[in-house]
Image (tube, rainbow, N blue to C red; front, top):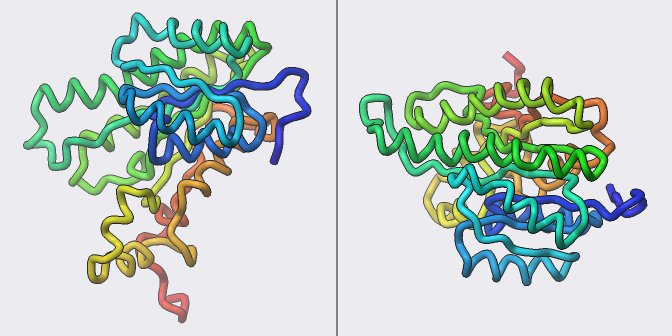
Length: 262
């Protein structure tokens, strides 16, 4: 899927784009012909990622903390000044530092997780909208999680924020249509990133992962990039306010059915 024949070269802003899933998404969009602006707090990783992405297409790096909500418009001012458009926002930045049940959640845990996963996401979308309208419309893709569908009780705080993202989709989609902006999200499950690869040598780890999905391989960051490209492009013009699970069927069947089909 390529977008190089549009009237103007489109620009995508990717938060959390200095590594992992965000960087993989940025590379896929660059390969498809987008100008890329990665936004991240980590200056060193951001510059390294920028150089890597530039092998695939034009890229700029904006060091920014998305919890500084009043300053979010400044990000898009910089991007618009360089590329003369803002067409896509990939709201990918997020954290999952707190792992535990409800009784272990403190106020600092709550405030930090919501500030990044929800508040920052919302105000980045709000700030992007005027620039997208000026560019002729656009697409916002928010990164939720398969935990927005599941309740496991062990990562309660993270799951709460990811469930809320799907509500944000609906509200922003109902509001931003007047600007020509579509809003959707993706819900990845277990993705084989650099972070998760460290578990490959652990006995039984890969078998456990494969036993809860319905495909023959673990989902890769590049696989997520393909779904995001679809939502970012006009190929998905019929979708707004939607979420696409990208989890190899985990949400349908947590644990494969026996061959008998029972």
